[in-house]
Image (cartoon, rainbow, N blue to C red):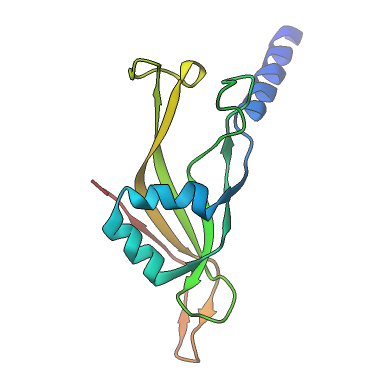
Length: 151
Protein backbone atom coordinates (compact mmCIF):
# COMPACT_ATOMS: atom_id res chain seq x y z
CA UNK A 1 0.00 0.00 0.00
CA UNK A 2 2.86 2.37 0.86
CA UNK A 3 4.44 1.75 -2.58
CA UNK A 4 1.18 2.55 -4.34
CA UNK A 5 0.75 5.77 -2.37
CA UNK A 6 4.35 6.80 -3.13
CA UNK A 7 3.83 6.08 -6.84
CA UNK A 8 0.65 8.17 -6.93
CA UNK A 9 2.42 11.10 -5.24
CA UNK A 10 5.30 10.90 -7.71
CA UNK A 11 2.94 10.75 -10.69
CA UNK A 12 0.99 13.71 -9.37
CA UNK A 13 4.11 15.81 -8.92
CA UNK A 14 5.29 14.92 -12.45
CA UNK A 15 1.95 16.04 -13.88
CA UNK A 16 2.26 19.37 -12.07
CA UNK A 17 5.75 19.91 -13.54
CA UNK A 18 4.61 18.95 -17.03
CA UNK A 19 1.55 21.17 -17.18
CA UNK A 20 1.59 24.25 -14.95
CA UNK A 21 -0.43 27.24 -16.08
CA UNK A 22 0.64 30.80 -16.57
CA UNK A 23 0.24 34.02 -18.51
CA UNK A 24 0.28 34.33 -22.30
CA UNK A 25 0.49 37.26 -24.69
CA UNK A 26 -2.10 38.49 -27.17
CA UNK A 27 0.66 39.14 -29.73
CA UNK A 28 2.76 36.01 -29.18
CA UNK A 29 0.17 33.27 -28.66
CA UNK A 30 -3.22 34.51 -29.84
CA UNK A 31 -2.50 36.49 -33.02
CA UNK A 32 -0.75 33.55 -34.77
CA UNK A 33 -3.78 31.36 -34.03
CA UNK A 34 -6.19 33.97 -35.42
CA UNK A 35 -3.97 34.32 -38.50
CA UNK A 36 -4.77 30.66 -39.30
CA UNK A 37 -8.37 31.73 -39.96
CA UNK A 38 -8.09 35.31 -41.29
CA UNK A 39 -11.82 35.97 -41.75
CA UNK A 40 -12.64 34.68 -38.27
CA UNK A 41 -9.64 36.51 -36.78
CA UNK A 42 -10.84 39.76 -38.34
CA UNK A 43 -14.31 39.28 -36.85
CA UNK A 44 -12.88 38.60 -33.36
CA UNK A 45 -10.43 41.54 -33.49
CA UNK A 46 -13.09 43.94 -34.87
CA UNK A 47 -15.77 42.82 -32.39
CA UNK A 48 -13.83 42.69 -29.13
CA UNK A 49 -11.25 44.67 -27.20
CA UNK A 50 -9.09 41.83 -25.90
CA UNK A 51 -6.81 42.06 -22.86
CA UNK A 52 -3.10 42.15 -23.79
CA UNK A 53 -2.38 39.13 -21.60
CA UNK A 54 -4.34 35.99 -20.95
CA UNK A 55 -3.88 32.62 -19.29
CA UNK A 56 -3.12 29.07 -20.40
CA UNK A 57 -3.45 26.13 -18.01
CA UNK A 58 -0.76 24.02 -19.69
CA UNK A 59 3.00 24.57 -19.69
CA UNK A 60 5.64 22.12 -20.87
CA UNK A 61 8.18 21.27 -18.21
CA UNK A 62 11.88 21.22 -19.08
CA UNK A 63 11.98 17.70 -17.67
CA UNK A 64 9.58 16.65 -20.45
CA UNK A 65 11.10 18.48 -23.43
CA UNK A 66 14.25 20.60 -22.99
CA UNK A 67 13.74 22.54 -26.24
CA UNK A 68 10.18 23.61 -25.36
CA UNK A 69 10.46 23.77 -21.57
CA UNK A 70 8.32 26.70 -20.41
CA UNK A 71 6.17 26.88 -23.57
CA UNK A 72 2.46 27.37 -22.91
CA UNK A 73 -0.15 25.32 -24.76
CA UNK A 74 -3.85 25.96 -25.37
CA UNK A 75 -6.58 26.35 -24.56
CA UNK A 76 -5.91 30.06 -24.12
CA UNK A 77 -8.18 32.27 -21.98
CA UNK A 78 -8.47 36.03 -22.58
CA UNK A 79 -10.75 38.64 -21.03
CA UNK A 80 -12.62 40.74 -23.58
CA UNK A 81 -15.31 43.37 -23.94
CA UNK A 82 -17.29 44.74 -26.86
CA UNK A 83 -15.20 47.03 -29.09
CA UNK A 84 -15.30 50.55 -27.62
CA UNK A 85 -17.13 49.48 -24.42
CA UNK A 86 -15.88 51.69 -21.56
CA UNK A 87 -16.61 49.27 -18.72
CA UNK A 88 -14.80 46.24 -17.40
CA UNK A 89 -14.03 43.11 -19.36
CA UNK A 90 -17.31 41.19 -19.39
CA UNK A 91 -16.48 38.24 -21.61
CA UNK A 92 -13.99 35.43 -21.44
CA UNK A 93 -12.80 34.18 -24.82
CA UNK A 94 -11.44 30.63 -24.83
CA UNK A 95 -9.36 29.60 -27.82
CA UNK A 96 -9.18 25.80 -28.10
CA UNK A 97 -6.34 24.21 -30.02
CA UNK A 98 -5.21 20.88 -31.36
CA UNK A 99 -1.60 20.11 -30.45
CA UNK A 100 0.65 18.68 -33.14
CA UNK A 101 4.02 17.24 -32.12
CA UNK A 102 6.50 16.50 -34.93
CA UNK A 103 9.95 14.94 -34.90
CA UNK A 104 12.94 16.30 -36.87
CA UNK A 105 11.66 14.54 -40.01
CA UNK A 106 8.18 16.05 -39.75
CA UNK A 107 6.54 12.82 -38.56
CA UNK A 108 4.01 12.72 -35.74
CA UNK A 109 5.53 11.97 -32.34
CA UNK A 110 4.87 12.52 -28.64
CA UNK A 111 5.69 15.62 -26.61
CA UNK A 112 8.96 14.19 -25.24
CA UNK A 113 10.42 13.68 -28.72
CA UNK A 114 8.95 16.78 -30.36
CA UNK A 115 11.34 18.79 -32.49
CA UNK A 116 8.48 21.05 -33.62
CA UNK A 117 5.24 21.89 -31.81
CA UNK A 118 2.33 23.40 -33.71
CA UNK A 119 -1.15 24.35 -32.59
CA UNK A 120 -4.23 24.46 -34.76
CA UNK A 121 -7.20 26.62 -33.75
CA UNK A 122 -10.21 24.30 -33.41
CA UNK A 123 -12.90 26.35 -31.65
CA UNK A 124 -13.61 29.59 -29.81
CA UNK A 125 -15.87 29.91 -26.77
CA UNK A 126 -17.41 33.22 -25.81
CA UNK A 127 -18.46 33.23 -22.16
CA UNK A 128 -20.33 36.00 -20.40
CA UNK A 129 -18.54 36.43 -17.07
CA UNK A 130 -21.57 37.55 -15.01
CA UNK A 131 -24.98 39.18 -15.24
CA UNK A 132 -24.62 42.35 -17.25
CA UNK A 133 -26.90 45.30 -17.87
CA UNK A 134 -26.31 47.30 -21.06
CA UNK A 135 -27.58 50.89 -20.69
CA UNK A 136 -30.67 49.76 -18.81
CA UNK A 137 -31.92 47.80 -21.83
CA UNK A 138 -32.02 44.53 -19.92
CA UNK A 139 -29.85 41.78 -18.54
CA UNK A 140 -27.94 39.06 -20.28
CA UNK A 141 -27.67 35.98 -18.11
CA UNK A 142 -24.44 34.01 -17.93
CA UNK A 143 -24.14 31.94 -21.07
CA UNK A 144 -21.61 30.23 -23.27
CA UNK A 145 -21.39 30.29 -27.03
CA UNK A 146 -18.97 28.06 -28.93
CA UNK A 147 -17.91 28.43 -32.52
CA UNK A 148 -16.94 24.94 -33.69
CA UNK A 149 -15.78 23.28 -36.88
CA UNK A 150 -13.35 25.94 -38.00
CA UNK A 151 -12.15 23.98 -41.05
